[in-house]
Length: 323
Ligand SMILES: Cc1cc2nc3c(=O)[nH]c(=O)nc-3n(C[C@H](O)[C@H](O)[C@H](O)COP(=O)(O)OP(=O)(O)OC[C@H]3O[C@@H](n4cnc5c(N)ncnc54)[C@H](O)[C@@H]3O)c2cc1C
Image 1 (spheres, protein in one colour):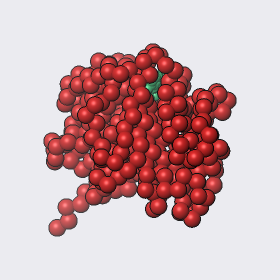
Image 2 (cartoon, protein in one colour; image 1 turned 60 degrees about the vertical axis):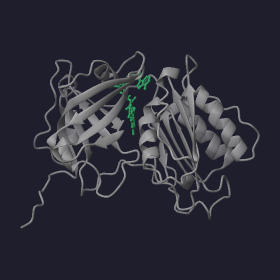
Image 3 (tube, helix red, strand yellow; image 1 turned 90 degrees about the horizontal axis):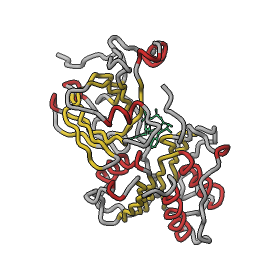
Image 4 (spheres, helix red, strand yellow; image 1 turned 135 degrees about the horizontal axis):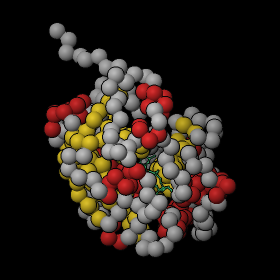
């Protein structure tokens, strides 16, 4: 007898309850989300890496949208509800999955950022055990996507660059890498007290923490990564400036598989392409001005092949996430 259950959607949309809350550091709140349905969470036989999910937060009256009976048109249907009723949907990363079966918990690290605070950050600030959210994520055995970390076949050296919003993704990627992995990680966080000294990484991966402690967002990354890249590309040291407003695509998402600017998708293996930073795979995520600056440098000045890089604008200063 078949035990397969038919689902209307290829992903999971489930109500979850906050089972634990921890203020990790001044800028991070960790929540553990629980639901018996999470027993089916994830992708069969695959590591989570930078797996993204969506969380739906309650509306101002504390009511949570119902997705009961959702079908392929779930997003349009949800958007059609009045904004003050439907609540707010935001994107986060699975920091870890703990437990098994009906006791499975999805762990998410949420940045409590400075004003103006959006609904995600505001919710995290006062998150409490028993709070309810809706989680959209991968259901085992079904295609979902949402993982961008994908080094090309010739990759021998990793470069991971992230601000605090992409720190959970980098932490999850590092946890899934083989012990033989080699590379550099640059992590910019709001203050020194946000440094996660116990971050696990393979011995060949050097992790550099860059607390801003009042410096402008992105500038510490640009200085450190620019210096490292110039050494690696045997180029003049680069003084990278933050991209100007009119240069920035707030939806910046350029990976070997997808281009928000409509660039041609790379089909070649980087080894066969231009011999620029050979063997390097770069994964860069965070505020769009910082990511745009590194993209401009790596693509236009250094000339790296797009099969070697993923540039992801996780958020844009002054712009609320849509929906
Ligand atoms: C694939 C992906 C994975 C992500 N993973 C995580 C994650 O694991 N943890 C996490 O915390 N975030 C993560 N983010 C970023 C998060 O979705 C955004 O920061 C989002 O804008 C937060 O929603 P909000 O409701 O707090 O703010 P919004 O309502 O979207 O924005 C309101 C205001 O807050 C500002 N703002 C938003 N984020 C920040 C910030 N970090 N610092 C300062 N100002 C900010 C905006 O510019 C805007 O002015 C991820 C984004 C993507 C695309």
